[in-house]
Amino acid sequence: MSTLEEMKKEADDLGVTYAKNVSANKLQEKIEEFYEAQETSGPAVAAAVAEKEKAAPEAKTAKTVKGVDPKVAKRVAREKAARETRVVTIIDNDQRVNNQTTTCTVNCSNEYFDLGTAVFPLNE
Image 1 (spheres, rainbow, N blue to C red):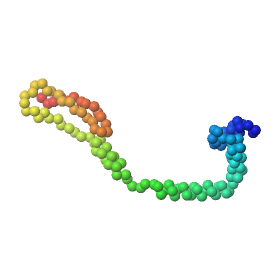
Image 2: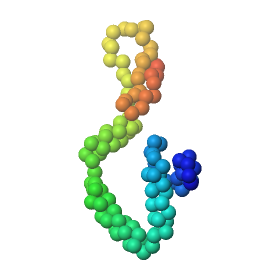
Image 3: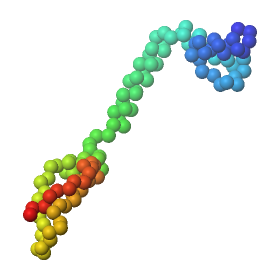
Image 4: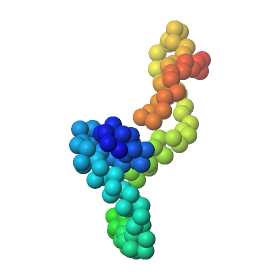
């Protein structure tokens, strides 16, 4: 482990993170700290981890939002209403004699879906 490149390779193999412009002394310290941490992972470390795990769920439950977001509820209600099936009757209310108009064009769409336009015949 005399050269910096060899130490960088060893640090990469161990999974030690370091800056790309790290000095040899700093990298040597990080590698030694890693080995010491591997050797001392005993009951003291396990107790510290257990203590952090106990504190973590409390923080998560405190941040949990309960209830319904009114904006989301309104959006879901609008989408449900828009997707309901509707029956539409088309009546030609023009009382004049019109021999040329025999069809009508209907657009079937809203903000959630688009079925395109359809051409329907009028009652003659």
